[in-house]
Length: 157
Image (tube, rainbow, N blue to C red; front, side, top):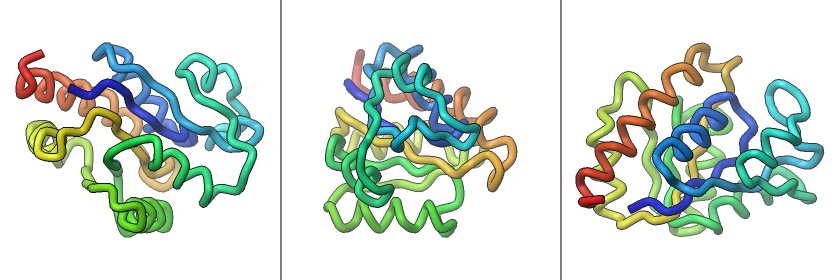
């Protein structure tokens, strides 16, 4: 069973990931950028709500710090985007399994099976910005709700 979900909280889709994890009873956290910066400006309350910590160092270091706190990476959106490529390369460098998924196209049961195969208990979720992928945030919450439900069924929780 997933016990903790980590994200950087920069994109609206990542906020939806935190909310979905909470609905599933999964603890949340992660390192947010200095100044609590998000794609919509500073959001310190959001970070505090989901147990995030303001990270004092540069962006590539923050991404790797979040990945070090987890066992796998789920990327939501285009894995060939600049952010997607950076996230998958960081996961590869750290030896973390990763999966790129597109909410609305990828089957939630496929993601749940991947989580099961790798016995993921702490998961990092990264996502494209809403400005680059309009509608991603709106699809992310319902998609991850179905992923967590499918995972709980597989896990017997």
